[in-house]
Image (cartoon, rainbow over all chains, first blue to last red; front, side, top):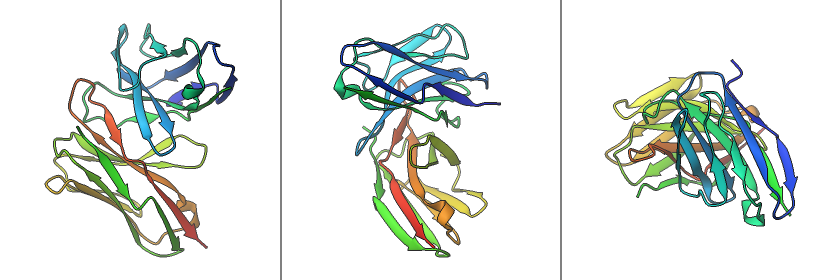
Length: 114
Length: 113
């Protein structure tokens, strides 16, 4: 199993540009989520999905969209990039929505918005 | 609202020393407590998961304990090695609409050869 994969690893955007961060998992996990990691603030939940076709907002959803058309993929879209979205983005998955399951993380995408 | 704190923020020890990393949480109503390791510029690697009904978990030189009543978890690393140098994060799985993980801000560990 490749686990949780993310592309790209690095990205530089200009303010106002849009882009999609890709995330895929091959563990047949129902639950997938996106976090951002900022210095001194830990990881914060952006959006999550409990299964194909079902998504919901986390703590910091503004400026981001998600969709879940398949079990495997959970892309994160930045609609109009802002410097405040400069961060490291992690995708994660676990077997089900139950909080008792172990969570696995991808390698991250390092995004800089100029 | 669940808050997770890790103290100290940074720790430097000589190789071979046994050490303890601390994690505290404010709400004892958790599903589990998960410890992660993060190397510079890398993702999070899961080290140990302790369910709320368990007291401890062990993997190799690592031992994690959980005391829900006091809101504390510790990660014990035996016979530390330079390769253990990394940031260690704890996260509490908290019941609620999202069943999300609440993360501490981590302890940066440096093991000096």
